[in-house]
Structure formats: structure tokens, C-alpha cells
Image (cartoon, rainbow, N blue to C red; front, side, top):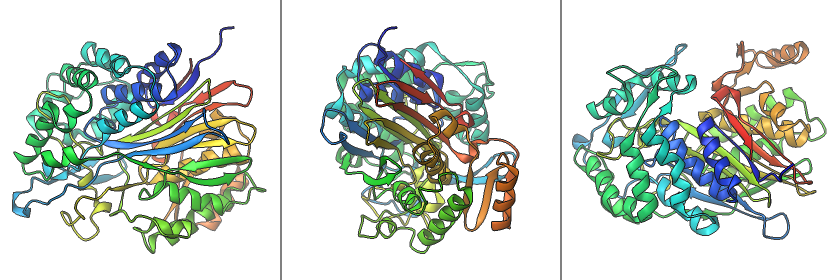
Length: 498
């Protein structure tokens, strides 16, 4: 049997195929992750966009003592100046999840400074081995020829239909003959293909101070947004040391402050009894305890870790997707990205929307448009790698809003403490506790279910696995060099060994 090149898991089969193609050609995990993220912008447009940002946790295998880990923080930042409130384009729209309705905010005034393009190029410069033009090819080709809409993407477009129809430009981008596409329909986005092609050929400057940057700045300034050309020029990717915490025989390396997700996962893991790996009541109580403790000072991630840390404005949590890759050398990349849901105003000629992250309620506890200027925003995203003392490596992360932290916690506990194979660790039933209320997938054994509901009288049982509980996509390389990978079925996940 031919030697395997690596493993990848992500939120869409095309995202997986783009990365697997690069692995099969000899690219490393970081090359594959970049190719997958470009593709996610094409086939997961509600979640990923050149107008958004995210994080990539990298493990470089060519370093001693379990490899060198670092986190590339390319999450959006607040603009350097706020416009007068009477100039700001900012509107509330209501989306329908079927069981509940939720208010989102759109308009040019909802956009923070994007970091997606600078982030991918920073990872590529530091760790990549394949030319960026080659890494972007699958996404460019897919945008030009078209992508078949999958059921999850059709559902997400339906959920955010008010955003897809908020302007004529958005309608042109996201509808076919005036209707939202159904599963099986083919959507083409030639403008996005051309934009990614130009970025890959000309480099990141086109999106920070060139033609695409000018288009992003003008759609903001012309329509009442805070984002300026200077904001785009001054954006900088930050390199951070991850949070290390032990789980069984693994050292888990998590996204550090000013992001909040990694600190929350670390605090919950620290409260788990490693000798009771499948103690679901213990997990629920750890989640509840940390949730209550964190809410006493929600902008202070250092408090969760017992020390000082950068203080974010608040943490954003919506509209996320994830990619995990490991190659045969043991390099690992875990990347989580977001565009919020998009601000409803496509960038002219570019085929994508800027983010609407400044429209999240959690970022504005004192009211909208009062955020601190020129500040890197916090996030619940927590892409991580786990390194076993025998050399095995797991890369994982999740989308899922406020449930990101509990989804990751439970998969780490299942894999690193309970020893479940990674697919079983992901498919196992999940729970989430927030403000004292327990939500859980009603698939636990009877005795566990009874104990959970007795411990948390305020609870809701979900009849089946549900995307509410996150979407953990994970790749693993064992100590013998074998690979496993699994995408979360809750969020349309896919995986492949290349």
C-alpha cells in the first residue's frame, strides 16, 4: 500500500478535497489548511469569507520536545475611529431558526477590520512550502465552475435569508432567479474566483492597500461604515504562545487570550477528574462552575487562568467553520474562521461580503457603537492541537457559537481521557450548560440521563444530535504514523486520509 500523506477534516467535502489534493501532491499540513480555507470561502460562504478572520494553531514537527506550537491570530479588530451615530448604516434583522428567532445586525457599520487574507499569507510565509497560487487553484476553479449546494448550506442560507436579501447586491450573490438555492442547485461566483485569483497572484497587499482593499474601504465609507483604508493597511497578524494543559497522556495546546474560548476550555479541563474519564455529571458540573465563574468578569480571560492577560472587548461567537490537518511529518494545523453572517453589502466586483462582527450583542454590553477603537477582538474560537507523550498528535476545533467550548471539551475528554477513537469521540452525545440551564442530546444511557436531569432541573432534552452542539472536525496521527480523521455529522463534516 502506498504511503499516506496525511489526514484532513472540515465542514464540507470540497473543503476537505482541496486540502487532500495538496497533501497528496506533497504539500504540508499548513499548505493543505490554506487551500481548504480558500475553498471554504467558496462552498461555505455564510461562515467563511476573505472579509472575515480567525485563528490557526500550528504545530511544527521539526522542533524538539513535541514540536513548536504557535497560534496565528488573524481575527478582526475594531476600526481606529468611530463615525457619528447619525452617519452609521446599521440595521437589525430577524432570522428564523425554526424553534426560535434571533436578532442579527447588518450594514456597513457592522464590519470590523478583516484579517483573513493577511492571516493566510502570514501562515504561508512562516510555514508553507507550496506556492500560494497553487493553493488557491481549487477554490478559484470551484468558484468559476460552480458548487453544488448541500443540505446544510441550503439550510444556513434559509436561516440568514434576510441578510441574503438585504441589498440588491446580496440578492444577486446568493439567489437563483430571485429564489434561495435548494440542495442540489449549482451556484457560481465568478467574481469571488477572480478576487481569490488576484490575491493569490499579487499577494496580500492587494487586500490591504491595493484594488481589493480600495473596494472594501469604499463600500464601508460610502455606506456608513467605520472601516477605512488606513485600518486595512495597519492590520497586523499576531503570533501567540498557546495555553498548555495536561489531559491524560496528552498536552493540549489552546488558543490564548485575548480570545476567550481556549481559556474557558483550559479552565474546564482543569476541573475534570482524569480518573473518571466518562463522568458526565462531573463534566456538566465543571462546565457550569466555569460558566458561572467566567460571567462574574466576562472580559477577563486571565482570571480563568489564574493570572493577567490581555482584555478583549467581549467575545464574538457566531458563524464559524473549522479545518483540521495533519501530515506524515507530524505537522498539524487547526484553523477556525468566521465572517459572522456577513453584513449584507457585498464588496463590489469581489463576490464576498465583509463581516458583521461589530453587530454582535456580546461585543456591545454598553450599547452599540461604543466598542474600544483599534483593539483586537476576543472570540470563543478555540482551535487546538494535543500532543501525546508517545508522539501521537490530534488537531481539532469546532464551530458552534457559545457551544464551541463545551464541544471541544467533550471531544478532548472522550479522546484524551477516555481513549475513544476520534470518530466515536465526536459522535458521542453532548451536553451544554449556560447560566444554570442544561441542554443535552437525549442519547445518554438511562442512568446518566436521570442523574443529569436531577442535577439540573432547568434542562432541555434534544431528541437527536444537533448542530446546536457544535461541529468538531479532527485529524489524528498516531505514534506509528497511521492516520484517522472525522468530520462532525452535526455540521455536515467530512474527512479524508490522503
